[in-house]
Length: 103
Image 1 (spheres, one colour):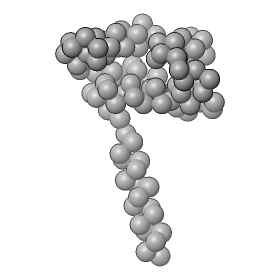
Image 2 (cartoon, helix red, strand yellow):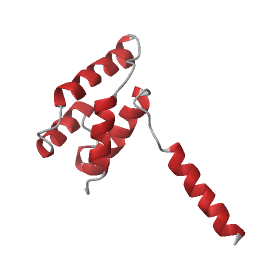
Image 3 (tube, helix red, strand yellow):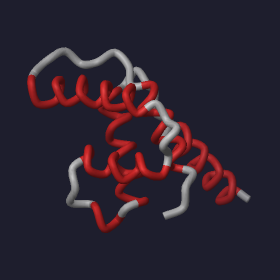
């Protein structure tokens, strides 16, 4: 009985820890990379932009301009020393949609 309770607590803790907030763009883009790598295992050596191009074909009705704008801001922060973007909401939505898809 105790073992099952500890196992249940471990699962709940892992689920809570896996929640990503749009207010944490680095975590959002890490999640997006993991999801895209799972969906497109042959493209793991591709850049994030190249993997997003693959995903764009499967979800044409999504707001890709917003995602690419958030990616531009994040890359400017990551590689150019600009300030961190305040949110990556559209990217988080995309990662959630893609996460539900089967590879």
